[in-house]
Length: 474
Ligand code: FAD
Ligand code: MLT
Ligand code: ZN
Image 1 (cartoon, rainbow, N blue to C red):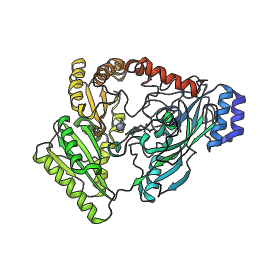
Image 2 (image 1 turned 90 degrees about the vertical axis):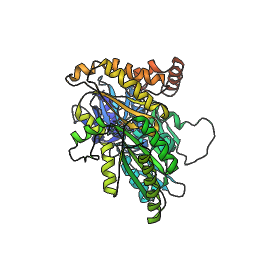
Image 3 (image 1 turned 45 degrees about the vertical axis):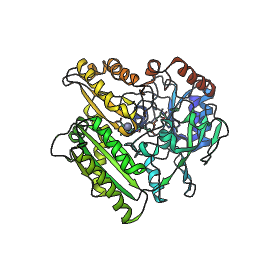
Image 4 (image 1 turned 45 degrees about the horizontal axis):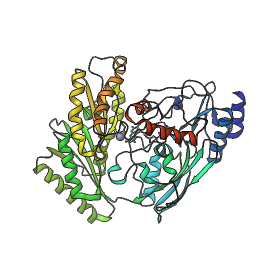
């Protein structure tokens, strides 16, 4: 292996070949949730596409598997190496250049290691919007977002990451650079290969750059937090707000009171929004690209009128409408801090499921009693992107249970939740991907033929099986 390390150092420079004996690799070897830890042979930190290609060729020549890694915020251990000491983590962090911004074409061409938040800010500097938005945006990278086809809180209006990508540059498993960096909105010239790599979690190739779609910047914004009794009422509210606001309605996030309580417990500055307790709460946002006070006033008027109607009809019981940007951020923080609060709270069996939007309330009504019947005192922490039919249905351990005892129940809890998901023709992983956490469930919930076609794609693009093995496929 010294041979490999010496050649890697010659390619990338000593400072960018990190080994467990010579450097602190803790930032690279454990996932965000702390569920998986590995021991890589080395962490490679190439500076550009040519270095990625050379590093991949070198790994292939030595038969070493590669684990691509972006911001390492993934929820399923996809970026964590195994414990064999024979896998190489390839960090994309140094590929962080912006290659072009074309406001007239409404596109930007950026490298994979750009942090999502810096791209949102770049778009804003050009009076444009890059709409992908999620709690990890300060550290996740666009390459990781594309590799996981991340969702987030604006999917209702703008779609998933897949919908925001026009072109890609990918280093294939043999080190060749596949240039698909076209900035076109129409291009029917054969199989649209970029879609193979979007959501592939690094198992087919390494994304080094992308052409991303931009949208008109929102100049007016309205944000509110509503309290209600049931998920069914939340669905009614969704219909009402979309009817009133159309495409200006951009976000609709559901939270159970237990989710909000968890945030208040672990983030003590979190304000109490309502005087009374309410079983469910919803965070909503509408935006408008129109500039000036007139656009803001018009948006506020439509937003408030719709919420008043919801109050009058008994769809919601109470509502807080943000009166300043700071208050809007405070409301958003309640939602965005749930993941981290959940981390502090300890063991939970996490699900990231989707059912048709219209079925979300029925799904919750069906699955909650099954869990309570199986485990007295169990604590479902339910929140998520209701506007997309995507719930984070996390099952926290019953009071008095130890973490190891609860983790030992994972398969049984998964079966309770995911069998109901399957009855609704839903997805057992809506936006977080498979990684090494959920790939085993594929065998349970996908047909053998679907898995077989995936394996054939994998075999065609990665015949040596060196691209992130043990991830995505069962
Ligand atoms: P990593 O974790 O580094 O990698 C994820 C996967 O992509 C791995 O399989 C890795 O091998 C692969 N990969 C990374 N970069 C590349 C590349 N350049 N080429 C090929 N493969 C690559 N996700 C959502 O969808 N919606 C949310 O709302 C959301 N909220 C989150 C909130 C918090 C607080 C946290 C911690 C995570 C959240 N996530 C969410 C999950 C996570 O942020 C996303 O999956 C994100 O897209 C991962 O990006 P990353 O750069 O951290 O990727
Ligand atoms: C979210 O929506 O907050 C994220 O997807 C992360 C999580 O599931 O906790
Ligand atoms: Zn989410």
